[in-house]
Every structure is written in structure tokens, then in C-alpha cells.
Image (cartoon, rainbow, N blue to C red; front, side, top):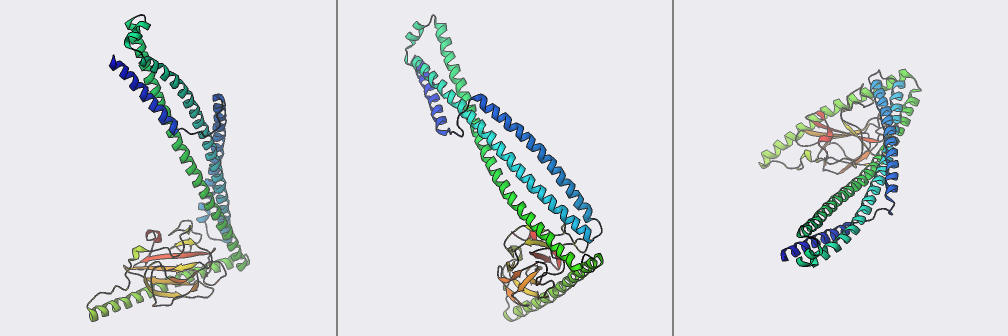
Length: 423
């Protein structure tokens, strides 16, 4: 008999602890509504969500159409009209992308509201179960406080007593299981709510990026229009401008390759001389070139290495990454090394090349002001000049489309993807 009383009290204590634990973790997210009101609003939100998804799918289809149009135009012969068509399509594609992001944010807001209602609905169900459990605990406690003789006397037979005891135990286990399920569901909903808040923040950041991208493309459009003005909207003059730009690029590449070889020969002779005189190796360039730092503040990449969307790919493969940077931004050396070239071409394409260890070299293009000279030794992060790239400004060159840094990495004289070396 003592064993039965003890079992009952343990059951009571276990349920009480469950309730206290659940109360401690409960939180109210919304003013309680009638259960039907929750379900009605959730259904309305789900309907709105379905409409938003349909509209977003249509918008994404339009984006894909513009992407296909851009790809087709890029494969056509270069012309003023073709280049403007590509730019206009890219601007429109970006505008659609921004609109799509706004629609995704609206979706997240609807999903978040729906989830909050579900959480509030579950909170209400939990409150109702607390009341039921409270009444049940009173009944179980009363039953547990009686002696076995009293329980038997209150029932018609010993069999009825056993049935009643089993009934109470079954109820206790069922409610405990229900509480566990509700608690698990509440935890899951809380996690989903946090995930939705994170997603909303991500979309807000994405919208900022896309807005910047649109600003950049609008600026690029104005820059291209300035090229049209320079050529007086003449296709023949435009082709002459492109030919001149190609020649300028080829000359720069030839000069970079030649001077890099010369500098490396000088360095090899210097190393040999030091070894002969001191019988030790030189550590003047102590930093490994694989430890490059960003030459300008890390920012969005406007054009990638061998970018298939590079607007002048029909002239030459893009051997660099174009890093967005405001006109006149601080330009630092990516790693320790010797300045092989510091070419100031006035209103033409100005650039700096630095030779590093391990057969690596870096090139910095569209430099508006150069602060180093050939044969200077520089360290990682040291100020070597200022960026440019705005059309019609010193160091910009022929075909630049806006302020940025043209950044190359060369391995044994051959351009490689700079993003493989940047942190």
C-alpha cells in the first residue's frame, strides 16, 4: 500500500515539475484571440503568401529573359548600339532583381506574422492544458492521500479500484506526452521564428547591395554616354576608339612582361651577390606572396577574372578583377615586394606593378596618382597611390566605365585569378 501511495506522489511530482518547467519557458507573442480567429487570419496570410510566390515566379521569368538577351548581345559584333542595348538590359535586369528582393521581404514578413500567430495559438492551447492539468493534479493528489482501505470502500469492488487507478495513470501519461509534444512544437516554432528574422535581415542587406549595383550600372550608363559624346555617335570613330584601347592594353601587357623579367634578373643577381659576400640568404621580402591583403577596402567585384560578361571581352580576356572603389581611394601594396613599373600615362592608362616572392607579381590599374617609383621596396599595406577609373580623369584610360581598381595577379608572368590569393 505504501508503494502505491509513493507511486501516486511520484506521478504528481513529475507532472508538477513538467508544468513548472513549461511555465518558465512560456512567452506571450500576441494578444490572445479566439481559436477560430487565429485560424482565419493564418488562412488569409497563407493565401497572400501564395499570391506573392506566383508574382515572384513571373518576375524571375522576366529576369531570365533579360539574361538571355544580354548573352545573345554579347556574342554579336561590337557596336555602339549593341553596347548600349547590353547596358540597358543589365539596368532593367537589376531593377527587376531589386523588385524581386522587395517581394521576397514581403513574403518573409507574411511568413513571420503567420508563425507568430501559430506560436500564440499554441501558447493558448498550453494555457488551457495547464488548467486541465491543475484540476487533474488535485484529483490525483486526493486519490494519493487516501489509504488503500478507503479507496476500496469507495468503490464497489477491488476490480473497480484497479480500473480507477489505471485510468488515472493513463490520463497522467497521456497529458505528459501531450505536454512534451507541445513543448517540442513550441521550441521548433521559436527556432523557425529566429530563422525568419535572420532571413529578413539578410534580404535587407541584399537589397542594399542590389541598390548599390543599380547605382553602379546607372553610372556606367552615363560613362558610356560620355564615350558616345567623344565619338560624336559615330560608329567608325567608336571602332577607332576600341582599336586604340586594345593597342593600349597590348602595350601595357608587353611592357609589364618585359619589365618583370628584368626586375627578377636584377633580384636574382642581388641574391647571388649577397650569398657570395655573406654566405647567407636574403630575407628582404619576408612575407609570402600567398598572404596577400586587399589593395583597397574589400568591396563588390564589378568584373571577375576572364568574366564572360566583361563588356570588352571581344577585345581581350579580362586578366584581373575590378574592385569597386571610389575615385581617389587609398591604394596599398597587396604584399611585400619591389616596384617594377610605376607608369604615369597622364590621361591614358596608368598602372603600378610590384614583383613578389614565389614567381608572383601584382598589377594595379587605373591609378589616378602614383606615390612610388621603380625599384622601390614596399611592404604589405603600404600606400603606393590612389585609385581612379572615372572616364576623362588622369590614369583612367580609354574604355573605363567608372571608378574602380583593376587588380591583377601574375604567376611566372601569366595572369591568374586574384581571388585565389586574396583573403
